[in-house]
Length: 383
Image (cartoon, rainbow, N blue to C red; front, side, top):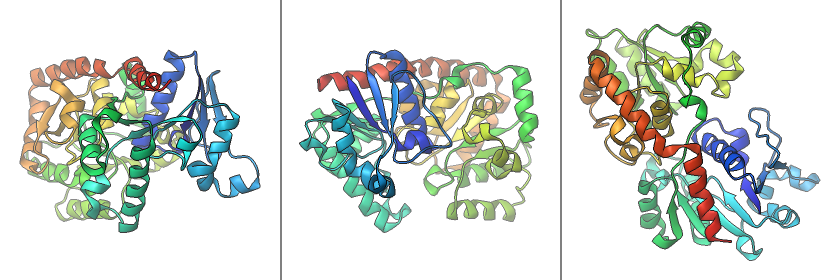
């Protein structure tokens, strides 16, 4: 079958939606090679590429489609789907083309989270209205809705009243590079390239209020006299990031919190921008700290589990789904609990080894093949 995708995030996004899209497309291409996959991309990409014999990039053609590429992606792409004899279309990030249900092409949409519905105060009011309209439309008109966690499934049913029988929970995988052991020489090379300390904790994610970097910094302050190990931060932010930096400067933590994404090396090295160096950075860390208040899934947790890096994460939202019995859980509102976790994982080597092993075992639930098979089974329901 010819299967189409909204591939905007796959070609252009360096965060969670992009990682999900690229990993799923590559997994389907590898483990279900009998199909042809058409990747609808509104504009040429420079950062990421997807290449295989059964992967075909579809760009807008003609002056009008190129000029109004957003309109092409959200509606006009239907003509290309029909021309290419697409039998099923998958909106990988919350959207499907307007009116696709009238073309005879079956559609699936992945909903990652409804955080804008649960925490609207953390978004621009206009964005909340736009997201709500797009997401609700997709859930109403798609033939199947994929939720990336049980938490997201519950939210879709609560906020949009989508019938349960229409929703399928399909967990995501991550780049298989995280599951490959990085050699000591490679780790040393990466540490030198980014001027990383010998020992460090790690945070990876957008620097926004919900992801709770401030409480990690407060935990670091609590440990200031007991642990001198710094925290390396990978991620971008704006207003909340400035709030975090204000706390750091007011409490003398400048040497303990390293914003790696702001460093000249990170800005200059292309393999940082594409995350190719991340497995080595993860595998060199004492622990990944990810005490988010709310997530759709929490892909950095899975990346850490595959890396055999201990994880400190939240005991709320979907994070226990992501971490299973392979993570150390804390109340995200408690800097004290985060601090205790940081200290325990560093000083209790037996606990650290246990978390690495349990985390690796739990990660086997999220192999690329298992995740691709689960999604393919959803497609087959519609053939």
